[in-house]
Length: 605
Ligand code: G6P
Image 1 (cartoon, rainbow, N blue to C red):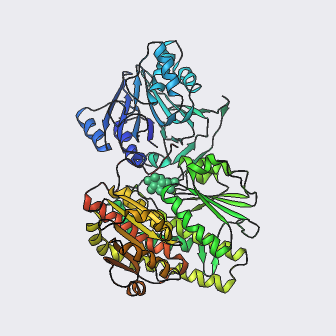
Image 2: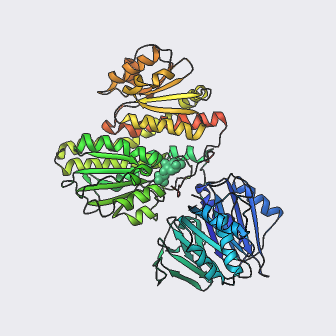
Image 3: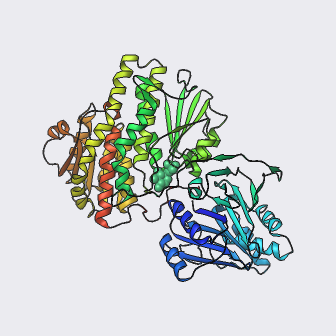
């Protein structure tokens, strides 16, 4: 992760650098820093631990002048979140910002140490600055010195170099991590994504893997991994420069949860017209023998829910895996299979690598992404937008349910293409799916009840979540959300698996959240709930009115969701998972939108 920015401007750049970093803070917020070259050629930097606001405050007291600069917001990989480990890293006349991991930094450090060059930080990145300064010392020009350094680096990186006495020069390089070049009016920009550059320009050139670029105010020159000078297309990328606000909500997360009825409605309007599913040409499931779904975190759990739909509705075998395992497992893939990478950001390093692994081995790759300009959207054979709109809160909410809605449409299309659903059955399922936005709007009314339950959950040390069938992955998501937001230990389990281990954890102090709609699996799940209550476990039952009436006595609390939605009920059950985690975090006073140690876009593996 980490976000990087570079600007060759015609005004003071430090306010612009900070503005761009605000838009990149979703990539990490352990520390932030900027460096500039001023009119005299002086290279200076400012760095501050913690959120970006600390850097802004520092710049008020100790301003930086200069029309050329670089900036960084950090998610720590090597070395704690301290000022000395914050970027930019500077060695004499060069400053560097980096996103990624230099895997051979220990070896490079040892070489530098042999020459008496010692680092001051624990980071891998400082090695890049030290090595470049060493090359400059040997008489190489800045461009030659950066090239000589890049030739030594292994791992993943997006890098920007800024040099003393070079107010019209930025050098950029990417391998693995994304990097975009922005074209202004006699100004040039560099950023981890187009969103960071949106206030400045919409003319964007994406660097490709292995590229390095030399930027001056006159433009950009790009070389590929083989050292050939290349042309990379410039496109207008409209990501909107408007300031994103909380629309009266206390946190972005609350706003994003509340937006779900509308954005799910948008998804369904986009992909379903009347009784017809509208997907890009070429997505025909009839000849396929398998679907493979890959993602990380919440996106992985959306795929996990979809496995139930693809298998039960379409009779299509479906594999689901976390991308970090999939990519190194060397899974055999059928050339009659469909590979779907699920990702809100479209930049998650492991998911992108899994997509690259699948390319050429399967019939088609699909990127299910929320950010349409992302690497996964560009590299997949077909990109399907999840249309959630910008999601700011680090923990995913509306992006999850939008992923589920698109996956539901895909599963129905698969079932119809494969003759498992005739037209009438498809129409009935589409009716269930189209009921979801209105049901979600009713589910939002549970907010107050969830807030009351959260006071109880906030006292707990551990919380268990149980679900069966498509509600099992939703239980996993509930536990994940609670961990992410409130730092309370939580586990999701398949209800039937409880007695094979986790039941040992149950005592009167462990709240157990049971997800059990009044459906064909209800009685089974309720039996598991009874096993909990027999051991003094405190149950919070989430069901519908019929389920709560049928569940019997002894439940500590219940939350009633509306009925409806058919097999797509998991989308509905996501709402109390989100609200319970949200209000528990509020009760505990944790940082809801930017929980500790997390980042929204994870561009390191
Ligand atoms: C991070 C975020 C999660 C997200 C996951 C996958 O861990 O904090 O909210 O689910 O990355 O991100 P992606 O952008 O690929 O959906």
